[in-house]
Length: 530
Length: 59
Image (cartoon, rainbow over all chains, first blue to last red; front, side, top):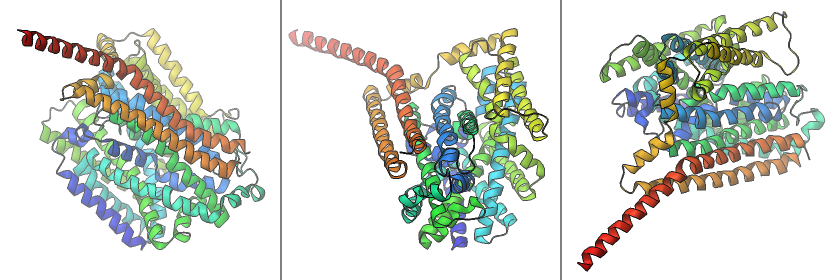
């Protein structure tokens, strides 16, 4: 059965890739699906990107072993708020500035090659380090389930991914992500409730007796509150400027789609995660001592649901891997073809050449990542330690200051990005070597962020922005998604009526999802907290 | 009552509440004044058109 599902899912992606290719007529379609993304597609791609293989394996494993509150209460909460900020603050602003990729913003804001190069290097290293490790980890698990040789499995994945990333670009990723979103949703609305139902709320609550602190934020390992707060900071800072999330806003049709996504997409973040974590906790009742703990959810749907539902679970696991990998492929490919080749090397390409360059970029990246995943060089594990937080210390202070501070300039951006990343790695290595120790609750990320912010402020105060930077800042401040959307709507017949209709729709959506949220989480609280 | 479980589900609810508040604030600040202004403009245009029609019919 596992093999059949594996083959079907891969075929589906290849089929969708081939189908989508006909809609990709120019580079705009390839990079931002021509700005045609509906609410369903943008919510789908955001939620699918959010729910990575790490949620279903690693974090579910921690929830199983130490308790569902350990990461979810503060760490995941930071990620949820970070997702909201990525959509409504960073993504919305960059979309208004007509950015097609995140490095586009650095290029437009500073018009400085060094800033762009540093930003692109941070993005490539961050994405590869964060994504490849998940690709390898989840691939190993899947290889065990399907019995397919790991190397062959990675090659098959890569071929399927090339089929829709190289032909469909962001268009292919958004559509397949939305399909994956519905598959993953099956875990939250079908599989997780089945596991929780079999475990029973009372039995789950009773775990505190056999596993002390199972229902506390510290968990069975009795982690300090400082650790949890640090997790909150890591995730909120990382997710706010994570390219995988921010770039999901760029294909949106208009501001109303972004605002609806901010409510619906952000609702699905805790919905999809928490149900999995609670079910992983339920697995502790049904089958204690699963080793490794990362396999808790897989054991859950393979052994405690019917074969058909287990198949859906397996497809969802594959969807989470494909979603993470496709994001990695497509964004690194964009960095290569658009940000490096077209913009930095100042290549004058026509539409056809630009599209070809973008597709070649995808194939090159896919082959390189496939080779890294198969060879598993030790360097990739070293990079992965720092990759997740590299955006928080490297990009975030520069992005926020670029949005809000008139004095912000290219020198401050370069110094802050380099100092943030370098100090983060240095502190990390010193702590690992035992040369440096930090008080409980303080970690290298906080220190590096402090370094990044301090160097940015000092450098911006002692240097001056160029005329270009000052002009762009003024232009940026007068540009907004609301203004653009109103102008677009007013060009249409009955434009005002359409704006008013959207306005009312969004108010209804916000009330509805707040109500659903209160009901869902209120129910779980009554069952598990009272 | 387990307060830590309460914090977990309160946070999960809070995310949707916060996102709704942020979005409504954006709508009220960036869209509502423009909608009102456009409504006023449309109203004035309609009034002028009515007056024109009225004058023409009198003539």
